[in-house]
Every structure is written in C-alpha cells, then in structure tokens.
Image: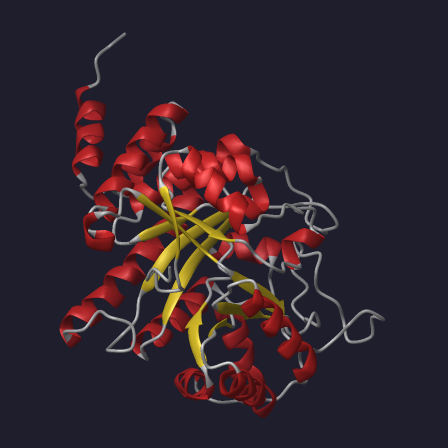
Length: 379
C-alpha cells in the first residue's frame, strides 16, 4: 500500500476541528464507514464539549412534540410525497380550532413542549386564517412553542398574500410563531429540485426565508432529504450552502452582541437528514439504506462545523439505526413524534416512547435529557 500523506493530513485536520472544503469532503465520504464515523464522533465531542455546564459529551437530548399538519391540500405535487391531496379529494381537510386544541392537550398530557405545525400549499387559505390559528394557539397554550411553516410554505404565502416576506414572517411571529422548521430543503441544488419538486421553492428562496427569519430573531432547523436522484456532490453542495448561511447568521449575531433566543438575531440550531421513503410516491428512484444514511450524517457533522447539534433520524431509519447514529455525529435523538403523517404515508411507520428513548440513550452510556426547541434542558 502506498502511503498517502495528503489523506493523513486531512484526517488530522478533521480530528483537530478544522474546516474542510467540498473536495476534501468528497474524499472523506469514501472512507471506510467505521473510520468516517469515528471522525464524526470526534467532531460531535468538539462541538458539544462546552454545552450544559461542560457535560455536553455526557448528555444526549430528545424532544417531546407533535407534528400537526393543518391541511393536506397542496398544489405543488412533489413526486416524493404521498401525503398531499387536491381540494377535490374526498380525504382533503383543513384543521379546525377544536381539533387543534385536542391535539395540543394530548401533547401536554404526554409532557410535550412544542407543536411542529406544517401543511400543504393550500391555494385558498388567506393570511388572516393563519394569524387567527397562531393567535388562538398562543393565547390558549402560551407554554407551547409553535415550530411552524417551512420555507417553501412561506414562499407560497408570499405569492398568495402578495406581501413582502419580511412582513409575513414578522406578522406570524407577532401572532405566536416561535421558530421555523427546515422542511422542504430536500437537496438545495435546483437541478435536483426541478426533477423531484419543480413547483416548490428554489434553493435560493429556501435560504432567503431562513435568512429573513434569522434576521427577525427566529431560530430554525436545517434538513436534507437524500437518496433519490441526487449525487454525492449534490449533497455536499447542499451542506455547503447551509454552512454559508449559518456563517452569515452567526456573524449577524456577533454584530448584535446577542446569541440567546429572544435577545437578537437567530440561526440554525440543528441539522437533520433522512433518506427518501418511496412507498406510495410517484418518484421512481433507487432507495438507499442505513449504511448510506450513517455515512451522510457523519459527513454532515464534519462539514457543518458551525452547527451546534445534529439530530438522529429514527423516524425513517428505525430505533436501532437511530441509536447507532449517536455514534456517527448525532447528539440528539429527535422527538418521540406523538403524531407524524407525512413520511408514514410513504412507508416509514416507526414509533417511539420516552421510555424507549431513555433506554436507547442509556444503553450507549449517555444520560437522557429532554430539551426544548433551543436545546435548553427542560428536566
């Protein structure tokens, strides 16, 4: 075997916490899975060392929330989605306030702290409908964070409401919106997006929403749905665009002299990736398994050196791989997901309880702790 000094230097740079570029990331991607996982775990340790009074490497967090889809009516017809309906479908719906109240009360009874609020791109719901929904939720359940509306939904709102994005997000925040989920990211490469979701927000538009939301003080997550028609290079470009946006958002925080939620500009809190789930969808693409999932998550942890947290995606991979992912860069097991309707329609039907989360975390030698959307411990 010929000794490769350049690879040795790259591995040392990763171990020491240095930033890698796209070409280096591609080299890392082709490492043996165990070696890539060890590097990702090292980067997790470096990222979490100072968290929770210096106990960040002893703690693995989780969240208790409910994913409420306020409507399944959507007019963008993504090929990878098995959830959307048209207005004419018999099972099309728009949630009522009474149904929302019931779902929130059930969530609180299970120790939940958050509602993940997302829907389709409904062509006829007006702005006041959304403001009334947010205002009702916040007035009746002020203790619950509303983690709502993906960037693609906000781009849809801009078109339907015919208002500036800044005004819409500011009004939603004033009505009760607490943070923004990273849904609709898929792959932030327009060539790919044109193949899988041609009517959805572009890559630039997705990032524009996040930039505006961060500037207005909202925090958000970032996602990647992969394993369909994209290449590894596309995944790396996606990671690079996220890292650039995070650099911008963190620079804005430093300039404002504030980094605590509610005191200044926001930023990304975490990265979550998952694999394309093909069942009941129109997208004909080869699927990938756990090996590819772990490899991609590990690469994400290494590349996204400015992201404080990485969530394991047990919802699509199952509890066992979700647990293993905690050795491949993740420091969080995500949510117990009291309700989930989108990926389950595409064939992922795994379920988890708080007791399950505790067992999986403790079996790896970590301490399980519930956290809120901003990764502050709640117990």
